[in-house]
Amino acid sequence: MSTWTIGSAAITRVEEQLGITNRPCEDYFRNFERDVLARHLDWLVPEHYCAQQDRLVTSVHSWLVRLDGLTILIDSCGGNHKERSWAHRFHQLDTPYLERLRAAGAAPEDVDLVLCTHLHADHVGWNTMLRDGRWVPTFPNAKYLFSRTDDAYWDKRKNPAMADDPRHLAYEDSVLPVVQSGQAVLVDDGYDVTSKLAVEAAPGHSPGHVVFRLADAGQRAVFCGDVLHHPLQVYAPHWNHAADEQPEQAAVSRRKLLESCAEHSALLFPIHFGAPHVAAVEHRAEGFVPRFVRGVG
Ligand SMILES: [Zn+2]
Image (cartoon, rainbow, N blue to C red; front, side):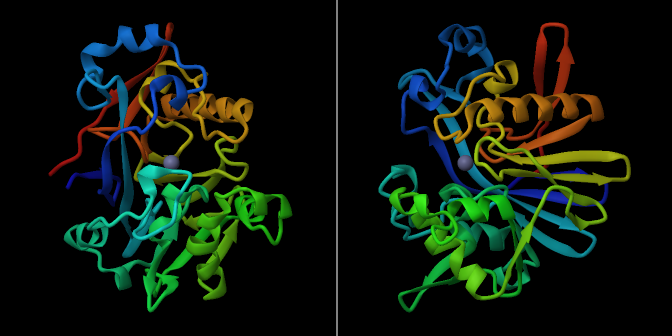
């Protein structure tokens, strides 16, 4: 398990899944360009692209952040035993995610904060677990931070159109039980999680998508959720993912994020990049370039 250090914060990757995507490249990105893939094959294989199957390789993981005595979990993967008919990669999973979290040093009761960048199924799954036939919060002592805009979008009580979208099930089994237990905090752009960790709106992939910006002792990181899905998007920020709800806005947020990472030397901590999972961003004349940063361990 790899750990990165930003100022006094220690950040450990907790894996749920790593492997090929379940759709062809042309479906994974709406405006995929095969020549961009071909140009970068030398470093893409095998961590980011599987040539035999012609599929991109992606990860699904959480970031476990230890900061000033707090134990913080950022995005909670797909979760176990969840009905996900629209996303086979997340349907009825049975993974040892909680064992891995324990191996990283955090039992469920140790987690103080769960931060979700947005409310898609692969970012909220471990928010809850099945106990006696009911979905209950996995982290009994945690406050869970959800974007207020995303909450209003995915909750069919607030947005009746969502009742016809099967994906609202992820809200029902992985967000609503947390709201009902009183552990949810709805946040907006500019909310300070701590004096070192702030919420910033980055809409597009979902209407209320947010990123979490960490700054400590002159070092910076951005937990950017699904503003980017794959390192090739650093070279091709105009590529939109199939699940980007608002593609034009998603591309604007992606470009803005890359720009700010390059300007402030902030490391990018996405949720779906293959190994080594974390990258700095350089802005050169020809465009943005990722520079991977390996963790320790
Ligand atoms: Zn995702």
